[in-house]
Length: 239
Figure 1 (tube, rainbow, N blue to C red):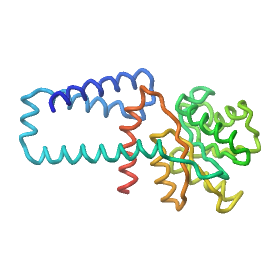
Figure 2 (figure 1 turned 180 degrees about the horizontal axis):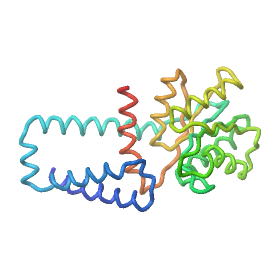
Figure 3 (figure 1 turned 90 degrees about the vertical axis):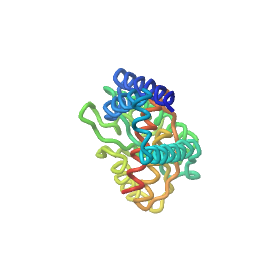
Figure 4 (figure 1 turned 120 degrees about the horizontal axis):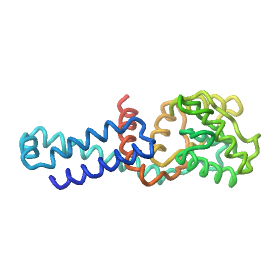
């Protein structure tokens, strides 16, 4: 177990450095720093034995690890196994950060998947959902619109939803726009694989069943994305 904490120290320290350099932390840098410090302390035998000599610490730790592994497994499996609704009337491409007037890598991966689906299903429309953050010069919806039009997607097939600032708002506002055009439409959500489960949970809370279209993520940000998503999914399940 001590060696496990030493490995965790290295992983968490590396994640902190990567997020500091490349961004995309979502406020997780302090969390990774705390994990680094705690794991480093527990990698010393005397501190490890001091804490884990208590039965309630051992039980709590085991239960926490089992919960984490199970939830992460479901998140990963769902991201890869999710399939779109057959011939969806609409897809909702969830927004992510825009850098300057260009989509970030995370958002571009989502747009690539959305573009593939729109090309394969000429009757499908896309709701481009994302407002403007404090560090963005344009709305995420507008950046997505420019990207897809430049790729050859007809403007008539694109609907901009540029008011939302969270996944819940993305879905709520997008469903309203879709309902205004067509009742009982079949809908699929496009996001990165780590995010599909939470989007589907939130859609279900809103009374909708949506398909999922999972996009890849930057390899060096995967640990942060999936670790952060554990807490986001647990929040959805508890509250």
